[in-house]
Every structure is written in structure tokens, then in C-alpha cells.
Image 1 (cartoon, rainbow, N blue to C red):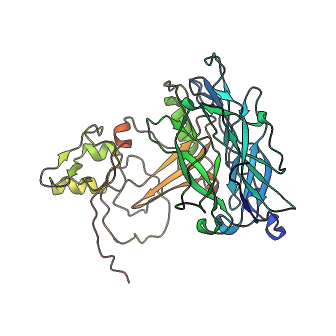
Image 2: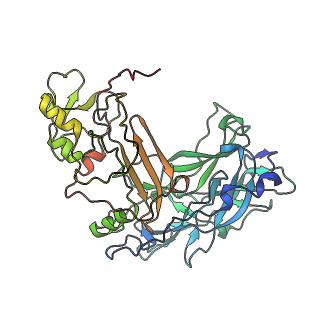
Image 3: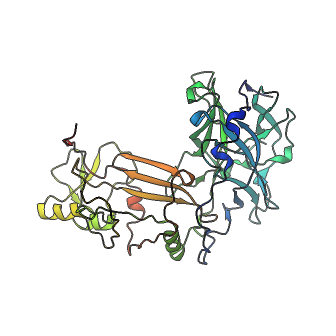
Length: 432
């Protein structure tokens, strides 16, 4: 059965079993609208160039642990249910018990473009990679053994020591796969990643990411045993690769407008606030400068569309953005230019100045599924802090929110600018 890691983790804990967040299926506060017609956005299926994938959010619970992992509340493991005819399971889904059930996993089938019909194949065998020692609620986690030229992208979970049917899951031809890396921590035998006796369960995401990246997540998880060697473990699974160069599943302008109408947040400002946000285009067009380390005396003006920004690389201090040198222009840029402002009535005392923030790109980014238009994650960026938050983990205070779309866009040049958006300046807050 291969290298199997056994654990004495028990799935039994009646004290918490009836009051776990994961027992609730999270739903957005309002039903999704009907998206405007055009292209394949929201159609439910994406063609990766011969391999069709569909996102499944309905699950059958297979096994759960009620201790360990985030919040020491355990995790639950599922397999996709209600798989459409012709599609096959690619892997199972797992989630910590400390948040409502809100996730997905991909299923796949080959389409007419796959004349050989061999993009997906059954495994030739299974290796048992982990088993619980619980006699009351046993669990067995299996890694598919792929045929030559194929790779597994997910695990199969059973409550019996008997190997699953070979028809249970499909492996993917290697040219439709790519290298993954571990993502969020899902579970371990203890309350910390280092306390699980070498056993850790993580989500998976593509190692190569960005606006032009081909890999995509399957939504599956991986089990790692770090009790041997140097404490690290090779990844036994892969993610998928999109070989279809068409952008037909991306939203068109009308669909983007509808997405903004559905999801954009209200931003409230103090009535006496004088430093307001502006668009990136406006910031560039009003004198923002690009500095290079070692050439601070000769900054260059940034093109309105950001076309002369350095691309890629890392945030290593080689480049940064700053305000115009001219004092009048500097003050103008500092105060911003907000074309539409909705004020909330709050305290009449404006906040004091506790620091200078030049070029802070304090923004939210929405991660929306191309399959159905569901909002799955929100990226919150403020000052030096930034993080992705699942939609089920933050409050929806507005049922319908409206945002005005800008008429121009800086495009991918700004998206691929990975350097500092302002110089680092330290100021005393005057507070103790």
C-alpha cells in the first residue's frame, strides 16, 4: 500500500459536533442575478483546450475530525456529489471546521476536440497515504497511481480499508497539468502545523500565478508527512493547466458592469476628510514619479497607462513611486480627486495624522468564479497589511451596492507592477 502514515486521531467529540460552523452551508445574502448574455462567462463549464471542467459545490460528507487544525476544531472531508453525466471526479474536498461550508472542486470530461479520448484515464492502482486508527470512525486516504504519462490531481477518501474502485476517479494527462504549491492550512493532528506528528493537510494552488498564467486550481487538498528527511515533503499531486488561449469565459464589459453592480462595496469617509482616494490613472497623469535605486536624482514621469513601469521581478527596493517634486502638484496629488462621494454620518471629530502614506494602494480585489459569477474571496489591502478573505468569513452589510466604473483602464502593466507604491517614511504618532 505504499508509505502509509497512521494516526491515533479520533473523529469523535460529541461536545463540539453539534455546534460547528461547517455544519452551516454558507450562501451569499442575495440570489445571483441573471448575467448579461455574451461569451461563455457564467455558463458553468470551461474548456481548457480539450478538457472540459465544471465547478461542483455540492458535497457528500465522508469523514470528519473534531480536534486539531485551525481553532482546534478539526476538519471535514467530502467528495463531490451530483456530478453531471459524462463528468468524472478528479479529487476530494476538505475544509476546516471553524468556518461555514463554502468551497468547490472541479470535475472533468474530455470534449470533441480530444479525438483520442485519452486526456483523462482511470488510475492503475491506489496507495494508502494515511489512515486513522479510530475503530469507531475509520478513514482511509488514497493516492491514485496514474498510468504512464498521467498525473493525479486529488485524493479518494473511504471509510473502509478496501481500495476504491478504479472507476472512482480520473488522472489527467501530463500536458494538462502543472506544478502546485501548498496553500491554506486545513488540518493536522494538533492545534498547530508543527503539532500533528508530521501529518498536515493543505489546500493546493498553482505555483505559477498571474494575469498570463495557465495553471488553475482543482480545489483539492494534499496530505503531507514531514516526519522523515529534512522535514519537507514532495507534492504528490498536480494542478491543471489551461491550454485554451481563448478568452471566451472571461466577462465582457456588460458582464463586468453587472458584477460591479452586484458586489462592489460602499466606501465611507469622514465628513471632514480632505485626503481622498483617486484612480490609478489620475495618480499617474498628475505627476507621480518612478524612482530607481541609485538614480534618485533623476526620477521619471509615469505614463498615464503605466506603460513604462518595470514588469515582474520582486519587491526588492529597486523601484518605488512617489509624489511630484513641485509642491503645488504634490499637494494636489495628496488630496486626491474623488468624482463620486457618499458620506456616512459618524463622529464629528476627524482622525489625527499618525503617519504619511504616499501612494498607498488601499483597495479591495474580488475573486469571482468564471463558472457562475459567485464571489469566493475578497483581497483587502491597507498600508503594509494585505490578505485574502473567504466570502463566508466577513459580514455582508449591504444587499445591493453600486459602483461607478472608470472610463479608462491602466491594464495589465499596473497589475504586473510588483514594486513599492510609495517610499517608506516613519513618523511619530504623538501617542503613548
